[in-house]
Each structure stands twice: as C-alpha cells, then as structure tokens.
Image 1 (cartoon, rainbow, N blue to C red):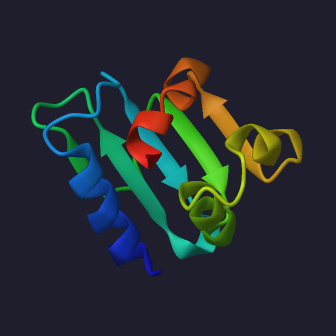
Image 2 (image 1 turned 135 degrees about the horizontal axis):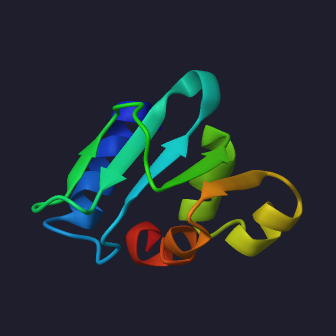
Image 3 (image 1 turned 120 degrees about the vertical axis):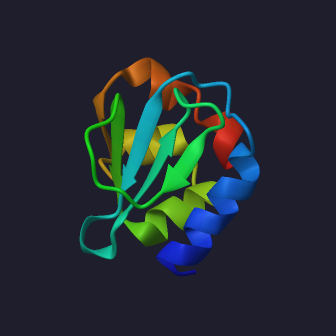
Length: 99
C-alpha cells in the first residue's frame, strides 16, 4: 500500500471527525507522513509534515500490520517498533481511527 492509499483510507475512516480533538502525525521516515488534524472542523487528513500534538514514528510495513490487526500496537510499542512523541493520550485514542 502506498502513502497515497494510506492517506485516502485514513481520510475515509476519519470522515468529518475522529473524536480526538487534537492533531497526530504518523511518521513513516523516508516513506513520508500522514497527518490528522482533528482540531479543525471538518478534520483534515493530509501529508503535511508540520508540528502536531502527537507524533507516532513507525515503519510503513509495521503500521500496515497494526492497521490490519496482525500486530498488537502495545506489543509494537514495547518492542520499539512504534515510538510516540508528544501527547500520549492522543496515541491511546488512535484505535478509533485505525479500526
């Protein structure tokens, strides 16, 4: 799955709002970023690499495994495959977005 496909999927899952009330960025390193700004109305989902409330650093392949339910996000965090910077409470609410 490409960055554009991930962005489109996230956009459809978020819709008008994700219920986060804050902004979060999934940082895939060299593969790019997906930003969800749920402080805006309607929510914005794009690829802007700008400051956010919470940044989740993860490889694209690990992200896809988490989104597909193949990998438990807590285990990925414990194993160092997923790193969270900023407001941890936002990261804990991401299940709403990832499905």
